Image 1 (cartoon, rainbow, N blue to C red):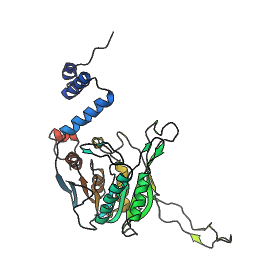
Image 2: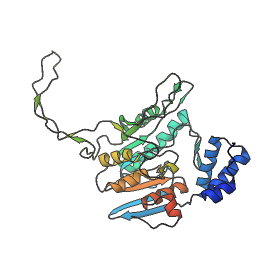
Image 3: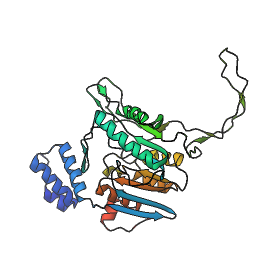
Image 4: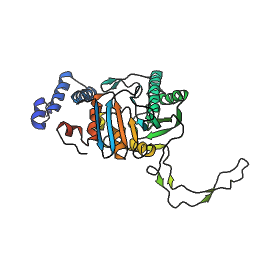
Length: 334
């Protein structure tokens, strides 16, 4: 027996979901593909999103703030923040919510370098950007590394990139290449040595280490007469790895941002590169992950985004609510 078409009335009376019924009716009327249906669902979510230009709050002595703005022109004095951590729009990102973004190649590199240098201006510590190029026609654009080269030309003090490792999309990589399991994090300061760095929370404690003779040698082959003593904590290394995807990002509604990164990634940088009581900036704040992790770990945070919808979304997160709870009038939890 042929299964009946699920109608508007079915969803309204049986499922009790008028919104799903209307979306289904739209798909049937327009003979939409699954991809078109998902795009329309996203468009409606953005359209229904409540907007605001500014939000702020406190948790004890810590302050958080979200404001609408542009990373090219940060409205702050020099050396205000202890850490800048963010993920800018990737190269050739055709749609970024309400904001169109279609830079690629050298245009993206020059735009990103301008933004990065502005981040360096307002930071007295590390500036770290999670970014990635694109692969097309069997060629990788290399734009994150071209950005590094451009920053070096402009006087930034670059560090070796940190690896953000997570399992890539199954089947990705193309017919003749490997799945992409990592993205580079471009890191730099303007003054060389970091003013603050701590591995006691992200590094592992070394147990049972005993003084031992060094195993390295001089150029003539003779062994160096040195005694090596293990430090109390092992440096965590420059590969930061964990799980991503639905249910792994840390906040239920983080996926309402186009390109969220997981809480564990932001938390690693906050705990390692920003002193307790310091302040972190995310100039592409999206759903507010960086600021949320700053507050969680005893730091203040500021988020900036061009889109009012993302200011509202991030504020919802810092209020301790989900989007549904806030729309339904749920009280603030923190």
